[in-house]
Image 1 (cartoon, helix red, strand yellow):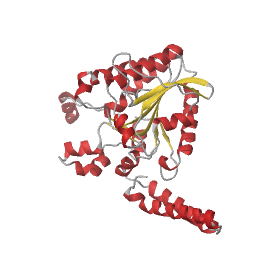
Image 2 (image 1 turned 30 degrees about the vertical axis):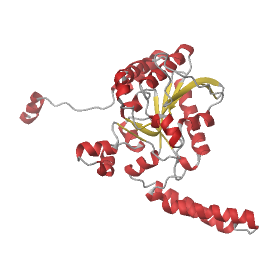
Image 3 (image 1 turned 180 degrees about the vertical axis):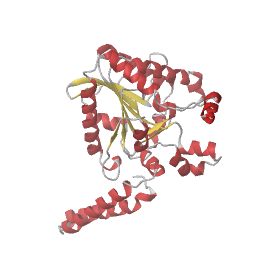
Image 4 (image 1 turned 90 degrees about the horizontal axis):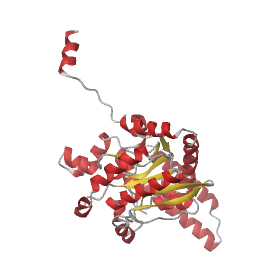
Length: 328
């Protein structure tokens, strides 16, 4: 498990609890009272620390190597998942996974970015950064879902779209732009789940939907804190300062109207209890799908389109209006 600076005291206490449990099993010595007291203490520490995380600390949690990945959620929430490959133009992109699955007795199309679980897997998945063929595969799956009337559930966890030369040569920007256009008008229900990092165009390329759910410790922004710091202060080490101002946390984005719902994580973060966070997310998906299904398709698409067009409101002041204000 990754060691986060603010998490060290909790990890040490959890290790002590595990040691006592092993001693109880191997030496037939009953430490149950001590274990119970330490578990209560650990739970209290997790709650106190995680309720007061700074934006930069939430970024660190969102990047945690042991945090559940898209396939971890798929295996726990859905049944009979059938992965589909390829964009029918170039090749398959392992950074995006997807295919039909069964959710509460109904067929859905589930897809998402997939980060690796270790070094070898991370390299294979390109660290969850899709190439153009990944976005084109995602669009192919959404079009298939719309054809058969299957709702789409898209899981977002990426630092961003892959910025390599090959990706640019094969039309990275065009692939993302086409997804924005076509996902916004796809005639089926679409739910987005930001469960780790939601980075820039790489996230929005599979992030246009009727409902946008976000896990409590996930982050979602147009740029990483390091990138923002490098631009504003010419110093990427000021990432923690940048994290405070770019409004990337779930609570900030709910207030701004960018997301629709925050999915509460287990005490101490999603990486501490895969089954619990999957159950919480499944409940949220079920509730939101039930809300979307009765809507007329024309109304659903129009509402989705307007939802994203209305983001980023600003006030325009012209020279004439400014002058009129002074005169008044």
